[in-house]
Length: 185
Image (cartoon, rainbow, N blue to C red; front, side, top):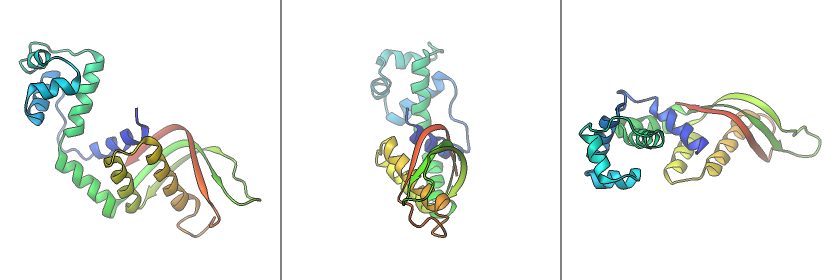
């Protein structure tokens, strides 16, 4: 599970104007239409083509929990692509993104300052350029570690350094033991 990637995805899904299909049959029909055939859907979901056809015809209604989760994830990943793109574009150009986290945060700083890691609960509005970097990295297939580094850099600049007004000598922010992480556009 990707904590940062899933968090960004959830924030974008808040912009949906219509709910995604709920029933297994409706989800399967949507995927068959998107991927233009039952064979591609079967390969993606790691089930037989015949099983896909039976869901499409509502001959099977209740998938196993693991299949239900994969099905929902794949549908939401493709649902309302224009709305998703608009939400990302707005965050990356004008709106920015809000990060709400409870995690162990510390930093590397010159001798003489308290750089002790401690659990903090922060809700910080990050400027559009960080939203753009996070979404661009996510689209390029960045790992959760890379997304975490971008978020840590954003928190360093916006929260710890207050956009250059303090803690100018701060070198690096450490972001660990994440208990809660949520993004909002």
